[in-house]
Image (tube, rainbow, N blue to C red):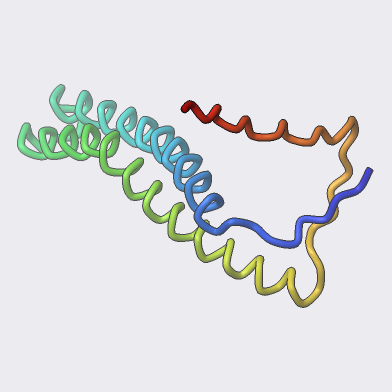
Length: 119
């Protein structure tokens, strides 16, 4: 069975993109922090020759990356997802939506239960 996605909810896409990009930001922040800790170890052992002041600054940037990068990635992912949702809706209205091939049955939602009226 084929279905065609002609319209996306821009806010829904923005939330998903924000969450996914925040996860990517966490991974990038962890990698950045790892390299920063390696640099801190080298600087504090005297191998780099820069002193303890620069080592402490590097450690601060590494720890800050774990917090700051997921926040920035999430914010920019949210904004990008919102813009992409709006652009997709404009383009899909002109040229048609994305065709998806699905298998299985489409199940209709159950009718909403009406509350009993007491007297």
